[in-house]
Image (cartoon, rainbow, N blue to C red; front, top):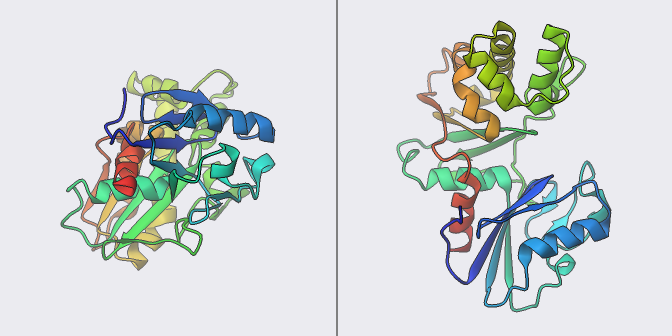
Length: 278
């Protein structure tokens, strides 16, 4: 479904495998591909820009959000140091605006009215990776390049980092380890259906993920007096399967009054992008 925006703007949600476009297109992209492969996908998403005055781009970091330069080394390695606008051969008349995808998601939620009564809000994005963004006194906290000022995916955990355990790969590994079966061909969505159908192992995976996440984020939520905690990203569609575990780990944080998934998970990033280019 096309995302409502102005006729003179284009919105792009750039992920590691697909670029979602505000006109409803979904363009495959291989973030580990060559420069020419990535350039081709970006140019396909952008199109010829006829009549377009502004392009809003949501993209994960590291990325220079002021200059529009790729700084990632774990993906998009082949275009490290390259300008997004140059890669797509954009004319100088088109203005590009960039924002970290999780910050963008939070921006949209802050303007939706749901969070109006809260000064301090945090958002966790659960999907292929683990994202975190925080707004204090109604200001999204960013570092000099524009990425979230505070991140949680690199938190040390067991033999790796938190993202190894709280993410798509973490949940699938949990199921493979507990069930003794291969995770090949099984998605988190499949596991959610299995859990809702009474599969105790699948249920345990979501509960375990909720306990791990809740326990690890508790200190940062308490430190910054977070009042509203939101969950976005595709795995948050299964938040009900981990909600009890998350809540149990966050009991006793006096400031925290609301914990819930966001209403519009599929288009949440676009909701922020519309504000970015408005």
